[in-house]
Length: 287
Ligand SMILES: [Fe+2]
Image (cartoon, rainbow, N blue to C red):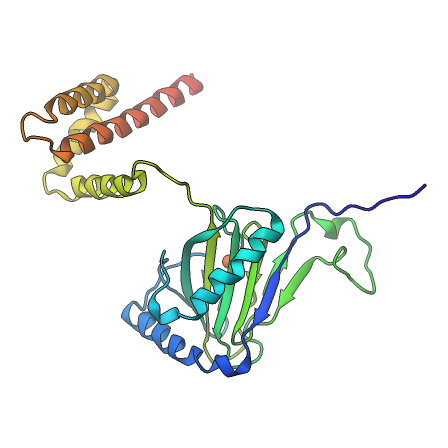
């Protein structure tokens, strides 16, 4: 009887390192990131404990060329190998880790491939990255003398200047605390599939958000939102929202001509109506 082994759900981790003669070009990138961190010393807090993490960007700046082009190129065969469509950059950010700084276990929800590119790793023991499996194998296997690709619990990589790691975004990973007094600089990125919208929905969603944010900023907004809250609490939220949707839909093209704000108001009242609907469902479920 010929038994055939088939591999299901393997975890692929791709890595490459820049040739030594190109590593010196990274010094400029390093300076650029250090300057960014000085402009915004607080950074953002996500999975990082300590250290500095920049905000998230959606487009590579010229300062990152030619490395950003190289990452774009590297992603293509990885996507092909796992059989997913062509991927585009979703976002990226910079990290500066110092002594003791680490990243807790996480993955990158909403993307397909993620990765890290080490821009400056001037010392040893600057925090290796550990990819962990999530099938609890530790509860099943006896202690083994040697662990291989099937039996090992984690795959770890030491950081190194110019090293690029790419991995499926669902692979959980953490970063050990740095034991060096120097700073380690890296950038992390996510690639995914962009929906091909036909009617500029993405642009309009941004416009809508800017509009909604502005209604919260307006100095009179407090009373207005309080009034809306009373109406919703009184059980008249749905009628109030639908009434306003009709009001602004009918006003569009009349009072102030084809004022985009009227359409934005229609959508905003639609969103508030969704909130009211959710509240009603919640009340119904808890009855
Ligand atoms: Fe990560």
